[in-house]
Image 1 (cartoon, rainbow, N blue to C red):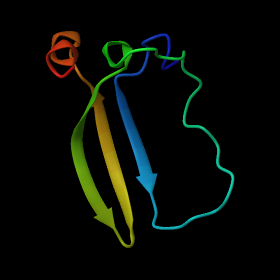
Image 2: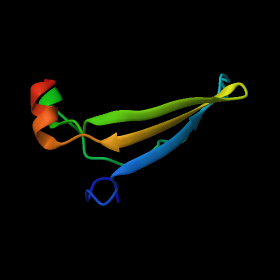
Image 3: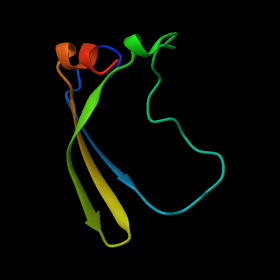
Image 4: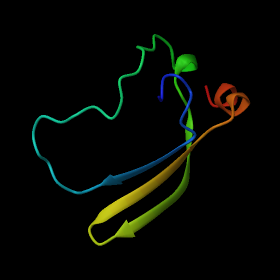
Length: 68
């Protein structure tokens, strides 16, 4: 869904733990250059106990070009 451009917001939680081999967030095509990456913006970062809740929104394509 991410690779198809069908997601415009992501809510992710991160915790201060190390657990060994992990699971990728998404299967995305390989990028050869930074100009090919998907740019996202933090909408909010909220501490929930020891964890962080990150809300990300897809950046407009013109913003992605400015950040390269």
